[in-house]
Length: 287
Image (cartoon, rainbow, N blue to C red; front, side, top):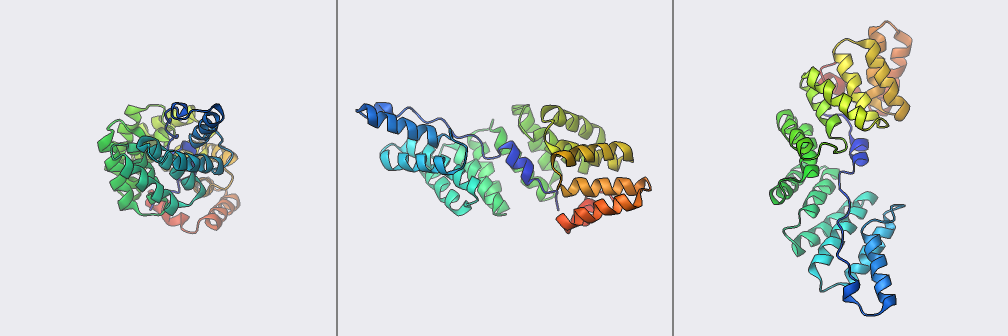
């Protein structure tokens, strides 16, 4: 059992930015054709983030025009797979990542990105295998360590998750979500002081993301610091008004303070958003 972390992993860009494609102007002769190819390169690299469609269109055009260029094709399939993942079309994404991997078996990105797609489908063992393979190819791939850590935490392997969080943060100290994720894992592991330091760093790095305040609120709740917990849960809910963990945590803190009606109202709102929220909090060691 685990806290719903979809928002944070979307916010932190777990799939990663599209890889840079080699300039293809050298491969064409006329200026209009060169302009068209370069435009598709920009689109395939994710220049237009208004929706996934421009990236899909640009990559599809490159795939048609560069059928003999294996490296370009590998990157284009990977980038189109990213766009399909953003759309929630995970089967199409996985097909593109498969093609990218077959074209360039030493290219770590599509392995990591396919792992993300598998995770979204809840195929956790397949996802772990892909993150393992991406790390084997690129031992400095911080995103792959962070993604693997999340699955290990979901599977109850907190020790393994913490090792991966440590590695990800060591490789990339400014990695989005990393400090908060480690804070949460340390909180569940009752490593309160180090968890608090991680949460403080997460809030400093991303003050407009609810997750850091939500995590620190749990630390204060587990420590019996009801007022501090309520302040942090309030901050989380200002940023994400329908965050069930923050509503439930604030409700418990209010009940502990004797604010019965308000506390019960928060708990009811949290249960309406997530039916198993009470069991989830019990798993975190809060009754």
